[in-house]
Length: 190
Image (cartoon, rainbow, N blue to C red; front, side, top):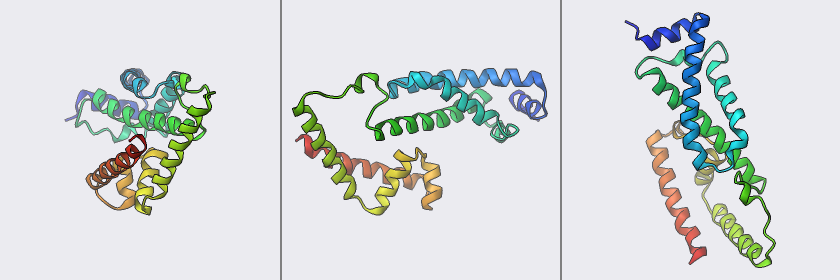
């Protein structure tokens, strides 16, 4: 027996136009909920709102609704859409943030202005050099973990598939690595 949500998704997959509107409405609601949470985490993200929303819609509604076709009805459609939206939009937001940081900037408009005080620049340069030394001192496995999580924006299940260990093992390695990095980076502030 199919739930009402499963029936709507099946109708959408069958090409019924009226099913598209109701599912699209739930996609928009899921995006708005995700957007409210991510705005606080990534300042300056407002400029990318339309792009992130469109990216989510394309992700969910492309290729003959391939992603929606994976909905199995174990949770309400709105809950499932929220989880999918959070993963997808958060990954894109992390990628935007990482790209901006690599380019020497930030998504935060207030952080874009260069410092004019030579002392502040010297302190920041020293901090960056220390961070670089700490990262250069990581083992190949740890550098790979950092690259997959923070440069590629992958989640634990994706990283586990690449590294061949369980998602719980990946999360534990990440937690331990972050604790070591935090301790090493705090040496600068001491």
